[in-house]
Image (cartoon, rainbow, N blue to C red; front, side, top):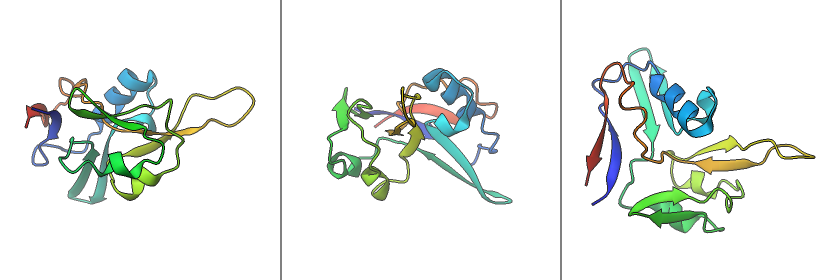
Length: 136
């Protein structure tokens, strides 16, 4: 059984509260670019919600030349210490995001891949109750 985040597109209004909560909980900063869930308005009435839903195909595992994607407790995770930010994973999945990592000494910050870690922090703060954890 795999636990995964589910977003009901009929309930989501695009308020992006989930993005703010995610960045605060996981990156310790209010910066929606560092969120592991993203909501885009593609048209006035159309939204696109992107987050890792723990798909069964898991193309990210094979795409990463560094082996940064691993299975832990039956879920896909990223070992960010191994990730080089090459972007190969982005070529096979639009639910993976690249973000700047913490600024390193003596240079520009490296980029690293991030995906939803299924923590569920966004669920309780969604004003429309559009998010829930499911098991497959």
